[in-house]
Amino acid sequence: MVGAACALYAARAGLDVILVDRGPVAGGTTGAGEGNILVSDKEPGPELDLALLSGRLWGELAQEFGAAVEYEAKGGVVVASSPGGLAALERFADGQRAAGVVAEPVAGDALYDLEPHLAPGLPGAVHYPQDCQVMPALAAAHLARASGARLFTGRTVTDVLRTQDGAVRGVRTDKGDIHTPALVNAAGTWGGELAALAGVRLPVLPRRGFVLVTEPLPRLVRHKVYAADYVADVASDSAALQTSPVVEGTAAGPILIGSSRERVGFDRTFSLPVVRALAASATRLFPFLSDVHAMRAYLGFRPYMPDHLPAIGPDPRVPGLYHACGHEGAGIGLATGTGHLIAQALTAKTPDLDLTPLRPDRFAEEAA
Ligand SMILES: Cc1cc2nc3c(=O)[nH]c(=O)nc-3n(C[C@H](O)[C@H](O)[C@H](O)COP(=O)(O)OP(=O)(O)OC[C@H]3O[C@@H](n4cnc5c(N)ncnc54)[C@H](O)[C@@H]3O)c2cc1C
Image 1: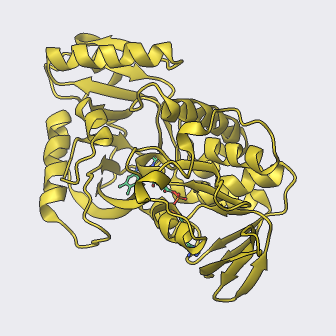
Image 2: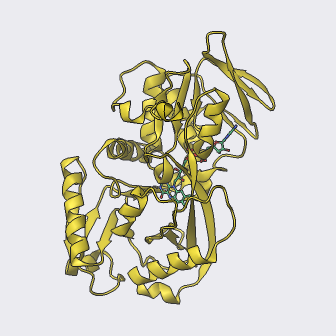
Image 3: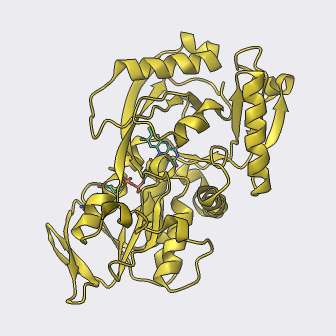
């Protein structure tokens, strides 16, 4: 998704672009997650600024690709489970509002007008109309095609070619060399490996997540609905399992129940306890789910960075190398802003956002 968005915005800025992927389009984490484009789960700061920019850009792209990428401006509802939790959620929303987010408090009764099938007796929620959704694999494919970039799938980058003074002059692949003065590392969870080929350190780690998919149903869940605990889970540095429920209906009918978070390397083993915990927590939010069949579960590896921020922009250690990776659980939502900022950097324009907090070399000192 991120590579496709970089290709689109770079091509629209007038550059000649080649997209290289060792697999198919959306064969990485993009094909293994959900497509929420969220501001609701982000605290004020650089990630929220990027999310607001990205949301605006997704809105523009929706004019072009809307139905094809299943863009849906459905809004998010973050539900508190206790009066204390509601007070904390409202304080969090106050801070977000000051940063430009639309966050509407919803009192207990009004909550059931928004989501009639929620568990009874919940104290309240916050409604985020700017939250929306796309289907990630379709979005990546359509943006890649619309970019007009030459697309080399099934081709692995095995080395980064550099001039004598260390600048990028191309990449070596298993099917021949490609010469270029500018290389964008959009290798997601494998971004650290690609950076290492260029001789620099970038600490991207996998954070596993399962999604549970139900049988197709009528539209019983109207928004993206999640428990307020989710925000704390996203921000957590713990390697241990977290499973706050995130429940959403889809145009196709199945309800998606996400999403666990745990750092267990690239372990693809199915985990019944994780999926069971997801189902149990979703059922507490929407009791009707206890009578619904789960059809399947799938998993993916989010590109996790130790400070939960992606690396976006030029790498001062290697002229010609740019990074656009490490978006963890938000790479679909944040792809458009990332692509736009990378295109600005590639064409020596002043970026719309300050890239300092996202600097790719910000972890360099730790390595020394
Ligand atoms: C369960 C789960 C739920 C999620 N839900 C959401 C959500 O609701 N909203 C959201 O915004 N995000 C979500 N995410 C996160 C999101 O999926 C990722 O942040 C995003 O897909 C990252 O996109 P990417 O393009 O950076 O990485 P990828 O999609 O992994 O793309 C990187 C590509 O690089 C290629 N590559 C790697 N190394 C090489 C090499 N040496 N040579 C050639 N090609 C190479 C790979 O083949 C891959 O296709 C979720 C993730 C998971 C796991």
